[in-house]
Length: 415
Image (tube, rainbow, N blue to C red; front, side, top):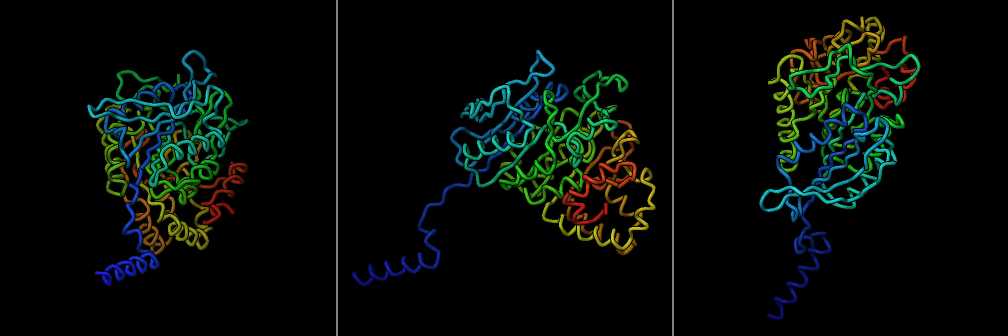
């Protein structure tokens, strides 16, 4: 017996020395945190921000005592009484009880002077969420305005201001929609603060969000399904769910999101969400039947960039001869021609062999994509799931900015 005891001690020591002591140590459960970040001080987004939250929590909500799941929601919206006043910026934790009733606790109140679209503020909320949940898995749902990779303030600069002339300000599915000619000017950006006109540049967004690694980012912002934006974010997360066009004010199918994100954080679960997104808009009528969505595998984007770099370097003359407006696009005004279909563009100038390699890699990078036949009157005849910028000499400032993006540094689209 004494000999057995000594043998047991020796075995434990050996296991510990070889890194196997964890077998004897109870493992902490993995915590999966979902953070919905809503920066909604612009009126059109603000009007529906709380409705989207209500939709989200009408589905599955983690139990208060859960050791493996948590839901945090940050909300800052436009004050109902003023065009330039923000509401209080608050980070909440939502949870359900055994009867399924949903409650929320305040994690942090940042007050009305908080600017949700400032990089430092964004980081402050992410840090607070991290401290609250101590997660091992993370999903970020970001809801606001969006312009993909476009530089901060570009739409609001002299001679560069545009409005989303066909944006549906009425919630899709409602009986009446605002006439296109009467739509107010709307600045697009990755988040937009109506008081200060602050926006999150895609590089700042990536820098701050990349402080923590995310299983997935669901980007409920217009034009975020751009290869430039996805490539900038490729090291921040494993998967991106985004649209290369605008997104109607309904946003994502929020009531169907949370359980899939928490229970099935993988390609299958994310494809399900994309399918539900497509079905939501496909089942609407009239101009509301407008929706595009793509699932992007970030692990495949470096290989995609390498293939594109080779095509561009060997076929630059042919690339420069492409008629830009002959390529499938996702915008409505030709004076604002920033978002084209990536595959349709590459097809115009790549050799047959090059295009075959490109297409094979695109199938890996975008394993799921879906689009309605039209997007508010714009026919979608070609849809790869990713948009891209086709350089134009008409935009020297934009081209100069574009050179700073990681995608251009990898592919040299703009020399």
